[in-house]
Length: 487
Image 1: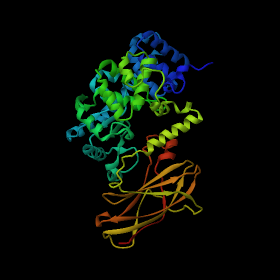
Image 2: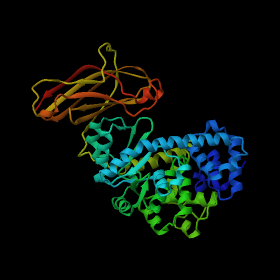
Image 3: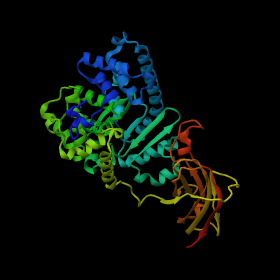
């Protein structure tokens, strides 16, 4: 079978959603009801609802809201309604868990800007029926970000990166974004920048906050970005790795249909943040594939009126294509694009961060028969006086048969002193030796000094889940852990 020329590289269509995801997008967004209904019927003919992924669940929620009781003739209708109600209930439970800290931020005088699905619901509460969201994405100015982190940690919310509250506080000045969780449903993402950091711009970030419009989210006064910012965000985040988050296209279509867009402003934002390529991909898909009515002149601003992408949009095509469908050369091209992104300034402020000490595990035949612990107080060679101290450590850790990071923190009673990261690069279980040393400046209030094991990622799964082997904190046996006064 000859491939459709429109799907050939470097045409925009090469990077569009395809297969089962494309059918659901037609069902959710195609203006022609008959075409949309047929796409849904085709999806059910080819797929089992029990195997649907979470992004597909979100698209199915939009489809169920769109057609409602007119789907009653379908055999899958009862299951669709059940799935819709389940996600709506879970979404409401998440809202209930996330509202108290949001109210605390507002009460503390912080400027809170809602992003993504929360912004859509704040502007139109009826959207919660079709826009399920289990987390709350918030943008805060730099001056408010650290205060918000302090409020969350004081209330017992945990960073999903695994660091302690002391460790996070010691590096918060350079944290771009952080996800926090509390219990089963509490899930809040705090952002300093509404975009990925490679698309950050000091001027544009400040303008976004200035232009943000007041809104109300479940009776809490908040702000939302302008429609132009929300569109560029959705297009920039959604067009990534096969449009895995293609439910954002539903958000985009809703904004284009319901709100007045200043296309000159939209283009200025997209160009300023180097997101012209993702915007062109999204607009070309919505207009050429889904037949949404977008003005030719508006498409032309981004080159989205033609099938073929411009040379400058090629990196965006590579990033938007489903990774699993890439050939060898295309994978190498994708690697080059990713490397270019990594070479850009990360935003980390090392002048304010506590030290990061790196180590590696080394297989050892030493017997690991000593007591195991998750924290240990370092021995001192002198009295608890201020000055420069040298810390040396030798630890034994039993590692599972997975490659992983082993995270440790060195803490004083009231502050973090440094972070230790040991890389276990072998897929074999066994006893590993970790050795490291570092110099630290201590005050009299910093004693005793404690070494603590940390998870490398917050894990909600049960105690026997495979994720725990990869991310859970590991107990260690201390061979030596000592502080020596050097100055």
